[in-house]
Image 1 (cartoon, helix red, strand yellow):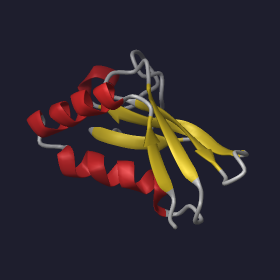
Image 2: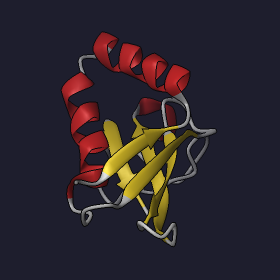
Image 3: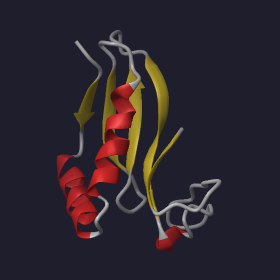
Image 4: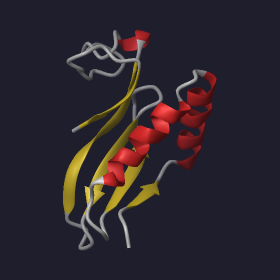
Length: 105
């Protein structure tokens, strides 16, 4: 048994994958997506939901008894948000400007 990703927004996930393919960032996106479950104990799950920020997701970790763990976002940064300068449309901050997906907690 391993940690599992439960996708509650399959249409949004496919739209983001299409965007990642068109922008040459599919490998980076899939790597960040895998990181959401990579370090969790067996039996844990991560639930993935669409987010208000473009090409981004909201996620929550759950233990086998459904106790919540970390909660955060898988946020797409780039020119549209100054690489994560805290402004619209993501309202998320990166210490180093980023072009691609970052995990935020």
